[in-house]
Length: 92
Image (cartoon, rainbow, N blue to C red; front, side, top):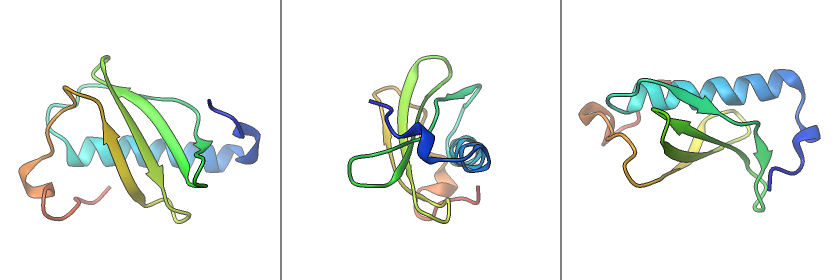
């Protein structure tokens, strides 16, 4: 499923991974660890990063061209959003 990996250079891949980690760390409670996979181009064209939080809860983050998060999909059991980040996304 992770096709088009060769589309992104190392700097872009690194920035995408760091953005995904930072977003989760700053917007969700009780995050102990974050593992991310290589970014890939989703069918609708956005760069997407999949990963796992705390060794068991999956997620998928879609990024805009400027590396802002456009959406996140969270599997059941994913950590809760921090209260202060529910109405407005916290900095990442």
